[in-house]
Length: 80
Image (tube, rainbow, N blue to C red):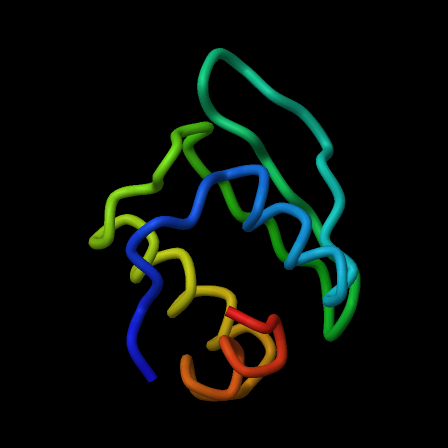
């Protein structure tokens, strides 16, 4: 599955709510999302529109690894 090229931080934040991620804080242009599903996990995302493709790829890999799934499975579950 191809990584989205036009995903904004707010769209990613909304999509990640399905995995239990909630905004825990924001400092400047960085948003910290946290989930307790499958153990505690924190992810910091830049508040950009769109998020750069390389940055988004790293974020998705980190989240997929935490939830023990592939990036394709994660993107399918998030509807990206």
